[in-house]
Length: 245
Image (cartoon, rainbow, N blue to C red; front, side, top):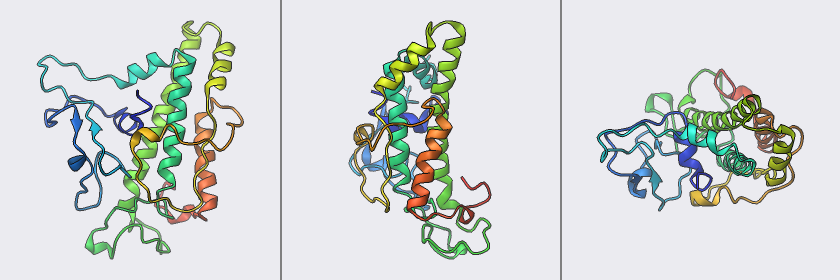
């Protein structure tokens, strides 16, 4: 279920809390996908136009509601190697889905720049003297990829903790089972994709091959996908603002 809602789970994984402003457990498509003046929505990038999104922080009907603990749920699920593989696969698929829809400067194509910045974001300019001129179109993609990396990091952290405390009695057997259930690597398109498919299709994205190297090195698996995308798009990191993410 979490893999089917990968966009909502990833977006709210670290930042979720009970919110009084939410009107229901799901946000209708009309408001979830509505862009603000900067061209952004807090429900994510590249949303399907007719799809509602989960409000995990909705608890208005319960006077003593506790904060929904997605991180604890994910940690408990990862005791099972198949569940671990499903969640890991979903995040790797989501990262590929996300980056292949970015502009050639790794920005959000829907973002709009303030008038004083001289134009719209995502225009693919030469970057000039660097600085922060185009930073607005990079902010949300940076956050989205950071959220995906955080969830993958949590999977790896739970695996290590369970191996140490005995929850996973045989780590080698656990790892073999995870590898057997992992679907593979998800190659990004060589040109920018403009489609906005339903969220539930992301985890079912076709694989392009087997994961290579240490599959439990989440950082390496993420950077491998991102680097391949950058090469295909002739992406120049020095066009990004400072941190070059």
